[in-house]
Length: 302
Image 1 (cartoon, rainbow, N blue to C red):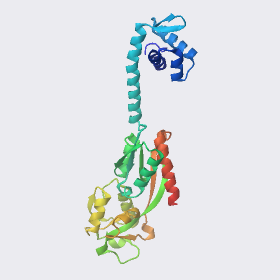
Image 2 (cartoon, rainbow, N blue to C red):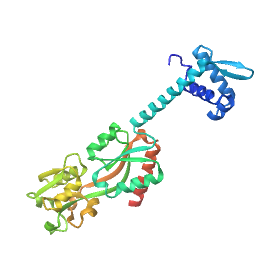
Image 3 (cartoon, rainbow, N blue to C red):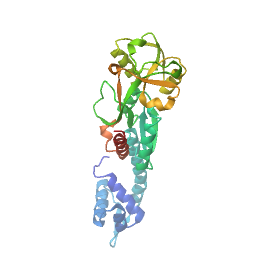
Image 4 (cartoon, rainbow, N blue to C red):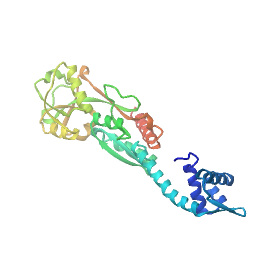
């Protein structure tokens, strides 16, 4: 605006006054005093530098210029409100919606519990679930494309400004079909150098853990196929197309067709599963509800 004395608040007061036709009713509607309403209207008139009202007795009567300004200001205030809502949405703080990112492997158990618990806390909240790899989800979080993520904390560390609420820890297990299950009680990976292995594509936490475990064994696995989600990987393992390493949390999904055998202690890799969100969004009531539910789940898991 060219004149800093012409404010959105004064235009809002003008619109209310034109609509109610009374200083006292405007004051009640906006929770101000009649004196404050009177001063704001005269201040607006002075800022615009043209007459808006005439006085009839103790009453202010709007002139055609005031009626035009009020009519135009209704549209202006509506546009400003829509702009602010879109701005909050771009920043990931839209009041009635939250975008939650997750690894595929968490959708069978922990994610439904988090969503249901958060919805109990905020019944009108819409939650959009976005699935992806660790790498993809962290990029989306940093860019504001999701509001929060539930995934494994990256071994390489986190960017600055990320708030972390730990949920639980999970180990990787040697996974094979029941028809080709190992005889050992725990797996020495160095004994499987010539076996065929399947794994997820790069960017997944389980893939990073897979290679980390074989690095501890001092060898490179013979990977014959990489797939895009953990459910496809499990189906292939159950069909005896190869072996892999899987987190223990998916055992309940296909435990009747896949054998989960612990790795020997020196090869064990632990995933730390957590809720993460930008510290800049920690005052968002939806994030607060999500964080409260995550803390409750953590207490229940310890």
